[in-house]
Length: 232
Image (cartoon, rainbow, N blue to C red):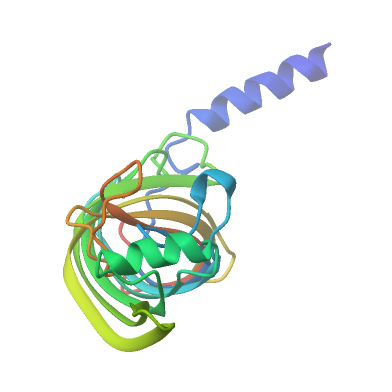
């Protein structure tokens, strides 16, 4: 019983020790890769989970402001494709509206956002094994694609493929978690939601989906290296 009481006292004293945890996070630069998909007017039947899942790649930089806040800049690339999920009748209907029923290509994007850390290391507190953060920002994208639509005439339907591109602003939302490694690095997972308010990502503006905006969703594994001096 005395040993157990001594153990509890030690735990209590350690928890009060101001050097038990320190705010030693540094600036970081990282690379992320993982699966992604697009929500658009001609990107599949999302209610039935019929859409293309393709890779995305990101480079990011975290600049520490204080124990709770970073400024995060991200540059990224996402492969996009409509897939082949529509009937012939629906493809013809979309083409009759002078819109592409299919496409393949990629999206380049860049954004900046403030990041809030929910559980950073703070003096006097036991450090968290997994740290969680979230942020909301503003960015700009460039979508480059090969679009497809039917050229309809009395004899036969001819498929026309042509190059197309769009660009515009977007609003990114991210939530992530990471774990510090023994080296000056960390590993983590990050989910990204990219919202294009003007529906320009897929080159189709029929507005035949439940949500009018085009969106990108990404889930990436990140490896980040600590750079610069440690903050105390």
